[in-house]
Length: 319
Ligand SMILES: Cc1cc2nc3c(=O)[nH]c(=O)nc-3n(C[C@H](O)[C@H](O)[C@H](O)COP(=O)(O)OP(=O)(O)OC[C@H]3O[C@@H](n4cnc5c(N)ncnc54)[C@H](O)[C@@H]3O)c2cc1C
Image (cartoon, rainbow, N blue to C red; front, side, top):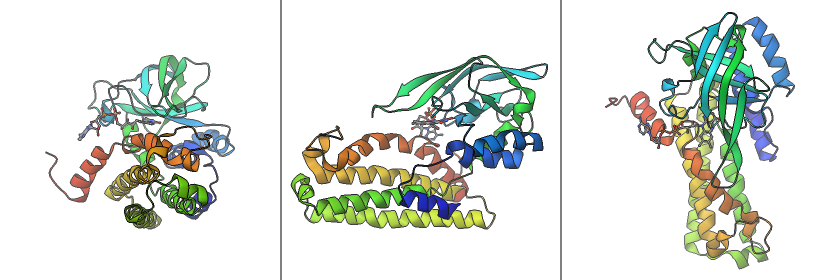
């Protein structure tokens, strides 16, 4: 799977399967019943079930276990009311998995259940969030008396926190990130060697060379982080603070790479329009500069990743 993902990224092929293939499927394989596996896995593989993730809420991001969206048992069903935040791709998905509070009196990690549900025509509404880079990638999702059959709970009722944590352990090698950084740098180097590139570059001197060389070396480091994580997974170990290290390095490297492109192109880097005749390299560094701001926030912010490294990796006290 790792080699396949690496080859796909090298070929600039679009990612197939989305969160269904990388997160939901492997989680159902571990925690689902035979009936759930049969019902959910094949349609996900065929691309008929497209998934979004409903974990975060307006008051629960870093402190995810504070989530409040309620699921109340009613006969053979649960009735869900509340709001999820940052449900990426929910506007393109037809199924949602998420964590919901089923016992408000239990300690906060204990009263949560993991459920799946179709997104269509059942009281779920999705409202777009447009990013500062003018992208519609994520949403707010509202639940109004959404009825979910009790057999859509994955794993035990009130033990959904642990199902959710299993899910977050998948696909952490992020080999696509390493390949992509390398490809971006290659495109920059090649472009600077063209006539147009020579005209657009505000800096082709020693400083620009040093910056690009630094990024190239860092991309090599990122490959090694990915290899470390995948080799741990291959030996049956669950990467923990190692994945946090890689997430921090990868997200911050994307931001530094964007910054390097911006510095290289100087004032030309202010052109946002991909198609403008003066735009260097389809504005890909300019747009990355804006889009990569969220890289250090989603998937668990980098501050939280640093907390994980401090406590689990370095055994430092929590406070
Ligand atoms: C573009 C985008 C896509 C996303 N997609 C999804 C998705 O599909 N599904 C989903 O469920 N969620 C998604 N998220 C949510 C994401 O996981 C959260 O935004 C993230 O976990 C941070 O939570 P928060 O936004 O509530 O910020 P908060 O938790 O309120 O944090 C605010 C700031 O305080 C810092 N902070 C908080 N607690 C601590 C602490 N203990 N120590 C040090 N610093 C701390 C944080 O690092 C951050 O800088 C997405 C977010 C973004 C921006």
